[in-house]
Image 1 (tube, one colour):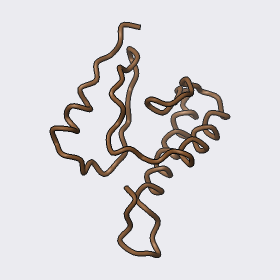
Image 2 (cartoon, helix red, strand yellow; image 1 turned 120 degrees about the horizontal axis):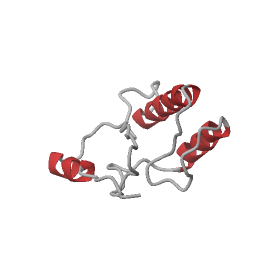
Image 3 (cartoon, one colour; image 1 turned 30 degrees about the vertical axis):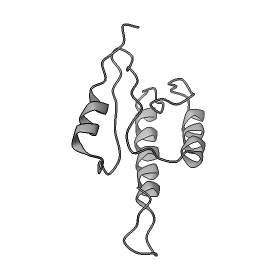
Length: 101
């Protein structure tokens, strides 16, 4: 994601962060709770969570694949990336099962 086709354009990772923040803002407006997968913060529907999300995105380097952790029951996941990892690795990372909690 640390690539751009021209020096005058933003990195793909910067565009991805912008898309994440825009989607998070829309979800918060709709009353949904948001959090980063594998992040330290619990899902929250407060407006402050958007700023915390932005700060977290600015500090973390994007991984090529999401962490392998179980999702809470009824959770929904949005993945944003270029998906250039080998297909078997992507498939294995996406085989997350909901937890019993």
